[in-house]
Length: 331
Ligand SMILES: NC(=O)c1ccc[n+]([C@@H]2O[C@H](COP(=O)([O-])OP(=O)(O)OC[C@H]3O[C@@H](n4cnc5c(N)ncnc54)[C@H](OP(=O)(O)O)[C@@H]3O)[C@@H](O)[C@H]2O)c1
Image (cartoon, rainbow, N blue to C red; front, side, top):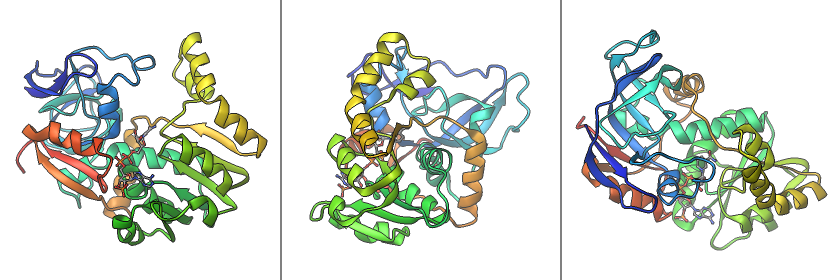
């Protein structure tokens, strides 16, 4: 099969003939119709996570898929050949024509979406779910600030937070103010001309997707007892423990997050880092919300499979509105 791989960290993405995947026990093979790009793809390429997540080379990048089940492994009995599915597979490798995926990572594709639309959702919607439902336990009336509302995570997090009954503030650039309003945001702050920390206070939760300056400033927005949840770092000791990191990595993570944890603690705010995980059952719940019209995908651009490097560059520009999708097979 054809796949886009890197041969070493920082190497360009190259189209290559790779062995066809065979399904292991509890796995199915999916013929990928579409995939989408996330910032983690270029971060993995650049070796940003190599201390925590060392990857074997050559590495097929890509963490989202929508496609059709074409083979079943031993004991795989939740899906049938021909089923249309979507997933954030673990391990990754969706910039490819096929992949073997654990059944536990898969869910049926939302019936109301095209393959391209469905492929835009898994990684970002699981992230939004795990932040808002699991970690923050958002309830009606909670006030949440979602940074970068026009991004892949932000566009879904706004919709899910509104569904959970939250009052949602978001930061977005001048060209994206209408988009985030249409997605349901109650308070929209133009980050290029306004200072969110001067406008918001007494918030219960902040979802941070940006750098350390925005992270620290976000403390001003939260009430004592509020939660600052960051998905863009720095990782904290709880995360280090959760992934079973060795002593050295644990100390590095402790140091990296020492400053924000100290500042948060002084204000009575809970700082935590979240790294999303694959979860087919949560994805099935998300598919239900999509088919009920609660969550809709937001697609920036769709690229042909051969143009996957250009799709990656588009995400790396930091300017995408919603998700950048790659059509692997013609619809
Ligand atoms: N830990 C995890 O499990 C996890 C999961 C998913 C994502 N992430 C991380 O979360 C971050 C966001 O991911 P993403 O997929 O949402 O990224 P993305 O789609 O690439 O974000 C791009 C968007 O961010 C907006 N933006 C850029 N700077 C901004 C600022 N200062 N204020 C407000 N908006 C700004 C851009 O709008 P303008 O063009 O108007 O600037 C653009 O629409 C990345 O660092 C990613 O690696 C982590």
